[in-house]
Length: 138
Image 1 (cartoon, helix red, strand yellow):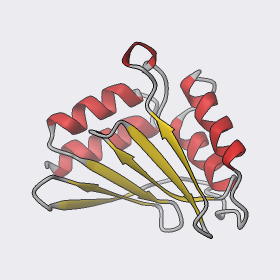
Image 2 (cartoon, helix red, strand yellow):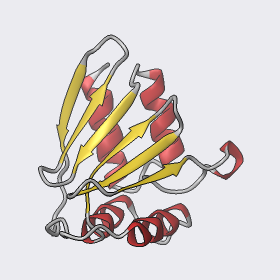
Image 3 (cartoon, one colour):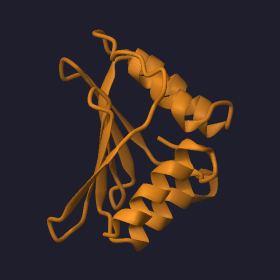
Image 4 (tube, helix red, strand yellow):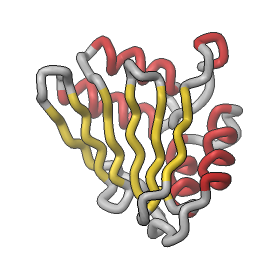
């Protein structure tokens, strides 16, 4: 994994210059198997199949505290909004934090994202079919 590629992916996603499918494609090409976003610490860690890992800080101005109660419906609503391109990645992060998501993991080969609450609640979101995967970032 190349740290400059991962940093660029995050920066471009936050700036609205790279879609989720483009980000995933680039990460796979760079050897990323999965990544975890810790929303309490505002950090993202990428993992390769060789056991390597790389951590990036998530620069998120006006980041809310992660809500104590997990709302799967709130997370689903944020996912739907970013997929329809109604919001960008920073607002998506703020909304899932307000919905109680303390972290999420994206499994590139498994084609799913799992959002976790502070008390172990979770929501599994399969990637849309490839023809529909043109929208935002989970």
